[in-house]
Length: 279
Image 1: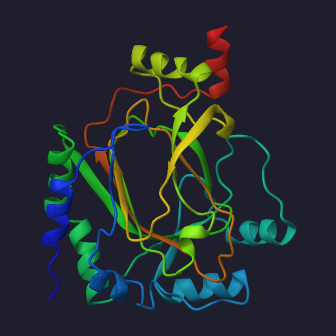
Image 2 (image 1 turned 180 degrees about the horizontal axis):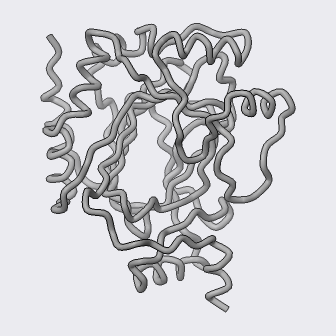
Image 3 (image 1 turned 30 degrees about the horizontal axis):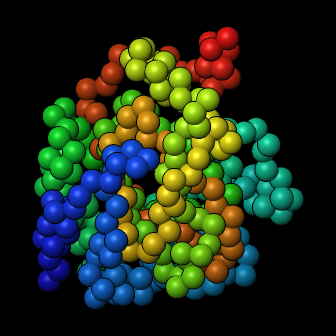
């Protein structure tokens, strides 16, 4: 019933954008017909909720499950307490105080067919060909909803990740104006030596840095648009959610290609240690 060959063609024909780093940004990715249907489905376009407790309960009834995810916690009670008390960490690179849910059982029809397409080996191979990726990879993808206070400060992504993509499929007509979108960033001049350090030591894992270390070059606001890039030492990106998640939830079709053959053991290091190394 649904055919998504046109999405493959869009990826194949898309031109790379090189600022702030090499990536694809494809607007109006799904057809208008498919996107309107998608964002009207009950597993995507949830009704307004009166409380966080009601929201979590109803999302779970719709087959969403809280998952472990960077920038998030999985302890629902702690999350509710922090919401009530407006109690959030102050560390400039703190990880773990938002919440992400993944749809585990897409309903039959467009949602299930689209999920299967993005999870297919054919789709993974199209991405690998476009980005000239030669190594064996594993695809991980799913439809996700992200709640208030989810945050990941600027980071280039782990060396173990080969590629990442994010399709905005927000059900709200006002979503483009809300503070929920991914920032594509570049390191400020005084911190660009981080890149040299990662280039020189392939066993040194890339780390998160404070927002003020980077400039935001582009924000992926437009709905029904997809960003795709292959992480390297320059691919800084970040997100911080500050919005009313009872009205609607930031929704994406999100995915990664992971290298199947893991790199040598990596040394994790805090950004402050990089600063000390400069001295």
